[in-house]
Length: 372
Image 1 (cartoon, rainbow, N blue to C red):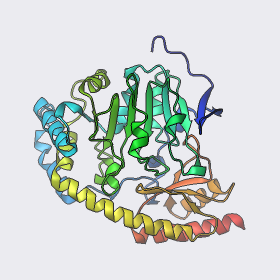
Image 2 (tube, rainbow, N blue to C red):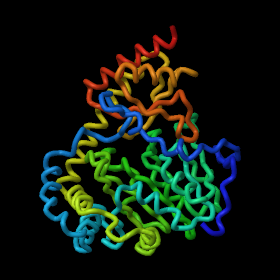
Image 3 (cartoon, rainbow, N blue to C red):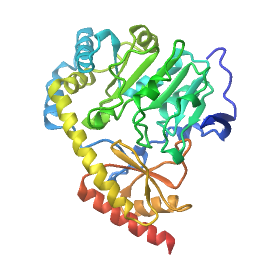
Image 4 (cartoon, rainbow, N blue to C red):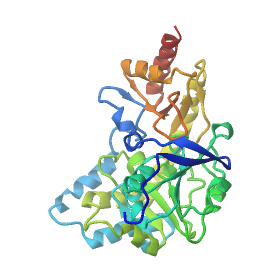
């Protein structure tokens, strides 16, 4: 991008209001995701998608749309998708941009030409990868494990004109108070809140999806709750003028017919009610899974509210434990690819009790094996 300086070899990071220098992870590291670890045949705790396939009613809905694939996606279909999302969040259709997954929204961020982008970490790494891949220098604001990775709005540099934060944050699972996020919004700044897992938390507390704040962009995904990772469907919410800027680099027909149909189907009242029921079940499963893992000597389960748990293992054992789990048929998400975390952190998805029992047994054995 013309006029954008080459990123430095090191990036500045703000931790609890103080300035520090942290090594910059390379782009390959930032682009590592759990699907790279979820090899077929392993019990998958690495990927945060719930279920092995979409529910039957959603599969039927998508199958019924197959006969429309001979035609290009229509403006009318896109309009119906935006209307469905708008009704779901109490907004206007013009405040909705349907995306090929929220990851597409992050890929479009460089088109906003920020001068001082900041990403709150540990957090989802695709936004930073997209920004740096376009030649932009990115600053970090690192949350601290000592205070539960809570966001301190004052730690974000005032001059930042693009701020990206997850809520709940991936992989920490922390749900930041909406008031702290609102404190980041101001004229001249784009505030991107990644709510990919918001619908997996009962009641969607702290969500900004229905709010209109200066420069606010809320990214939502259908991938996780509805098992649609292979379809790529999501949307952005924000001011129409800001959405138009975000969408400017897109090609024609950026979202396919099945993606548009999925957005409509998953935004309807019955689907929203089902996602709320599923979120309640996940919360109960999360609590039970966390309790079982805390019983293992040396395993710390960090606090959070998302459909995954961040674990800290005994110092220096993380990499070997992860490999032993893999040898015993269990895939977990390594976390040293997230700025601010290290090789002794692991993320595990919330799963049903039978699979959790396998994880607990394998993790107990791996820890004993490493200690021996």
